[in-house]
Each structure stands twice: as structure tokens, then as C-alpha cells.
Length: 482
Image (cartoon, rainbow, N blue to C red; front, top):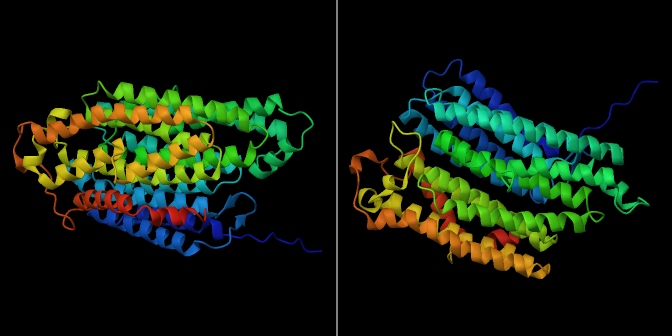
């Protein structure tokens, strides 16, 4: 009797296959293409194709690949966030790398491989697939962080990221091992079914496994106290890498964290992880904002800001409700445009011989480059949460979910932290509009939308920040089907 081969439904893997295949294509093209800038546009084409494939799968019936990966609404939405981030990251890198004399074909291939890891994490229904995606994303980001080999701060950033990331991966693997020891499976749905059917209400081995998994996720999304790598890596890595990494890695971590908590560890451990998530959210947003107050390096300031925003996102998860999940998804999308746009402006302001920018570099930017300053103003106001920009709605949705989940104290703390953040964001605005220019206008990247790849990235991020803020219903309606 001939063995019957299993039927493989590859539909959930289509976006992943496109991105991975395109990354290999970029590597092969690197052997023949002399002008490496063209490889950036080749990679950008692959991202657009993957986005088209993702949209084509929406809003079809969720399909599963051997119960290991799924193409449900949540996975597809995160795919779009990753691909938007990847597109903005490529547009920023094409011009930034050329100005810094860092054009390398492998840069674009590594970015695509990292993107593939993020997509795998969002679709994963098995802890082993989560780990594979996590490592694919992380290893590529380690190398990208140290891609400026002439700058010791870039090499230092890569080493710190690699060493601390390895520890986090070890914690994550131990968490997987203990969860498997308790449930006899690494499949999220089967873990959830086993825990729910246990006579023992809370298995101590599974609870320990959950704790170790949270440590691994806490590192990837920069939750306090697992955040120490963030400001150093954000400051030392090339700014184009930081623009991509600051959004993509965080979004991928939250995508998987949400699925693990809601699929595998609910309802058995819901009370436990909700309490932990609420406390971590409170500590993270407060520490991130307080630390950002004293920063003078803009990349480091945005690094601590990203820690604070991880706390805000975690508020939506702590609500443990569909409203909270939708609020979290909206926040991730808003964060992608606001933060990638802010780092794109930093790329434009950064001098050729610099690896970062200080507040003084933004002095008089409104006179030197009015459009660039206007875009940065929009990003700063949106990060604060000023209406009617997209940042306002993102915070409103997660704070409302917290109130509905009887976590009003967490929502109040979030509002107070948002007010606190206005101080350091306003510091950038003051430099741009109320200080005299410190250098010649010729030193700025000309902000001419559709003529400069970097300018296109800034323009698209700024336009999305305004348009989705004025009409958030378009995204809300999309999320109702998730």
C-alpha cells in the first residue's frame, strides 16, 4: 500500500514565500548589478507584490498550514503593517546608504529576510514556528545593526543586541520546553485545550513556561525591565536600520505575544497574565517617558519613547477583550507611521559624517527646510496624542478598552504619561521653530516628494498620520473583521 502524502495548504504562507523568494532574488541580483541602489528598488517591488498578495487573501476564510500557520485577519493585518514598515524602511535606506557610502546589496536582502521572519511570527500557531520566525528576524537585525563597520558605535550596538538577544532566545526556548513538558505539545490551540481540561487549575510547570516566554517577548518589544538594549542599539545602529527595526521588531513581538496569550494561556491563566501585563504596561510607559525627558540625542530620545509606546500597546493586551485587541492593532499601525516617519526625518537631518543627531541639529529646521520641519511637527504631535492626528485615536482606543475592562487606573496613568511626553516631544518642536539655524540649508536633504526616495518616505508617513487621523473609520471598519 502506497503511503499517502499529506495535503499541504500553502495559502497562509503565500506572503512569506513571496518575501523570502524575493530576498533570494536580491542576493542573486547582487552578483550582477553594479549600482546597488537598484537593488533597493528591486526589494521594494517585492514588498509591493507581497502586499498585493496579502490584500488578495483578505478577507477570505482563515486557512491553516498543517496547524502551524494561519492566514486569519490578525495575521494579514500584521502582514500589512510589516510590509508598510518594510517599504518605508527601504525608501529611507536607498538614499541614506548612498549618502553615507554604505550601499551594499546584502543590506536589502537582510532587510527582506528580517521581514520574512516577522511575517512568520504573525502567522505562527506553533511555538516552534514562533521561534524560527523570531530567530530569522533577529539574526538579520543583528547584522544590519552593525552594517556600518567604520563606526564603532554601530559595531557596539550589534554586539549588545546580539548578546542580550541570545539570552532572551535562551529564556524563550526554556519557556517552550517547559510548556511542552506540561502540555505535551507546542501547538497553541492544543496547549490551550490541554490547560483548560486539566483537573489542576494552574499547572506550575506551564505557569513557569509562560513566565519565561514573557521574558523573551519582553526583550523583543522592549518592556521594562528587559529594555536596556533599546536606547544603545537605536543610537548606535545606522538610522535607516533603526527606522525599520523600531517598528518591525516591536510589531512582530506584539503579534506573537497576543496570539500566545489568547490562544494558549486563556482562560486558565488569564487572571495571571492580565495582572502581569497591566503592571508591566504601567512601569514601562512611566519609565520610558521619564528617561526620555533628559535625552539630548534624538535617536536615543526616540528609543526611550518607543519603550513608553510599548507600554501603551500593552494596555490594549491587558484589557483581555476583542476591543483591546483591535485597539492594540490600531495602535501598532499608528506607531508604524509616526515612528518610521520621525526616524526618516532624522536621516534627512543627519550629516554625512554623523551617525546620530542631537537636538541642536534641529535648530532652525523650519527655516532651513520648512516641509521637513512640518512633517516632524506632525509626527511629534501625533506621538503626544494630539487630535485629530492618528496618535490620538490609537491612545483613545487602548485607554477605552482598559476602562471597559475595569482597569481605569491604567488608563488614567496612560493619560498622565501622554501629558508628560509632551515635554520632550515639544523640545524638538522648539528647536525647529524657535531657535536660529545652526548650519546651512544646503546641508539638508531636499524635501521634494516623488523626487527623492527619502522624501517620499517622509511624505507618505506624514500623509498617513493626517489622513488616518481625520478618517480613522477606514481602519476601524477593517479591524471589525479581525
